[in-house]
Image (cartoon, rainbow, N blue to C red):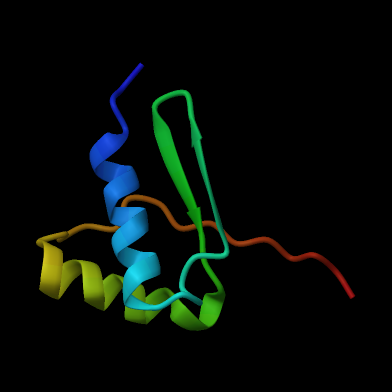
Length: 67
């Protein structure tokens, strides 16, 4: 399994920057999944790119929960 310690530190940085940015997160099988409200996606990407050197978004998923 991959060590997710560094990724979990970024989850904490996101929560410290804006408590509303992280609804939930999962750490399973060497992969960290962060659940965020859709209205904050652009802000989070900007924060990670400009302040922390991220230059690629590898995966973005959405769910339609119906009416």
